[in-house]
Image (cartoon, rainbow, N blue to C red; front, side, top):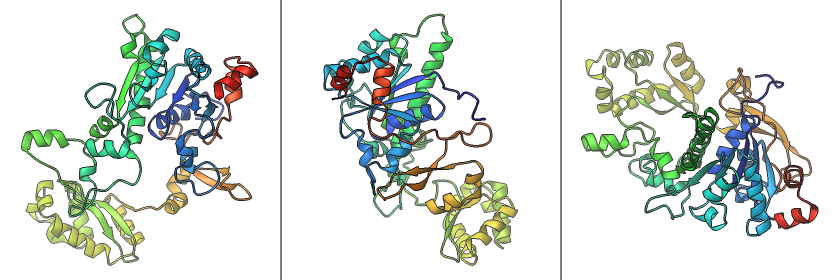
Length: 407
């Protein structure tokens, strides 16, 4: 898509009320494709994400990444002026995103009914730990808790050790994806007016729970338990019931991931590593048989990969169509020609606390339209960078009203 063509969501305005990762991820997705996302932040400190993994400067790269392409507006929601400004912004918006504990917006007088009263076309997308209803609705919870309750944590790690994390707040990010999808679904329903009438309020309130978002990614975890009595266990780098697929060491000290688990691929794989006996073994012709002998297979594969450097392993497997790849670090990603070809690392001059700005790469926009990533229009903004522009330009607040609203 060329720079002079309109983005898919241009003309959509989103009001983001939220901190941390889940709701801001939804806002980022909508902003990436052209929506005007107005992020409301508290006075003085702003979104707490500004200080997470802060290695220098005043704003973390995590905040800059999650809140790219947005506008930052400071409002004090503890004041009547701040809450009134939110209602006036909601009146002029298409979507409101929030990830407070259930009941918080209602206590502020900014609940669904109040928002609906000022804008009966508004879509309200709500993210919480356990959803807006049910016996656990009022409980607080971050992604770590949701990943545990959603079933993911029990499957991550080695079988002889306590469960571990994935290394990122994956539960928040999944919920953010669902929230963005839910907002788009409701906007589509609203715009098409299917049924010939305006969608009622309950169809414009999108309820995303962190734990349910994680559960939805757990494939057949629950059905396998109920149908067969299976309790899946942690299997480290493997995947339960699927073999051979694992990480294997190479002669140069690096590792590769190989997924040779499809029947035809497996036979080619074994021939490539010099194990024609395994390729011809009828007991290994199906995945069930391979899983039963997974230790034997992993030992044979590891013996072969350990005899070659990583690039030689990958080249031989690529030549015969066996899916395999290196285990990348951040430096590897920055140097990778495939990411570069699709503009998936985009560079900006950023204040990192040094005397001069540093050139920093940020992950591109997914999905791709037109062959390469859309350009990132701007990184996560400085705190309150757009307060005056939005509150005076969009709402027409006077200087005194502006001061009262932002605290």
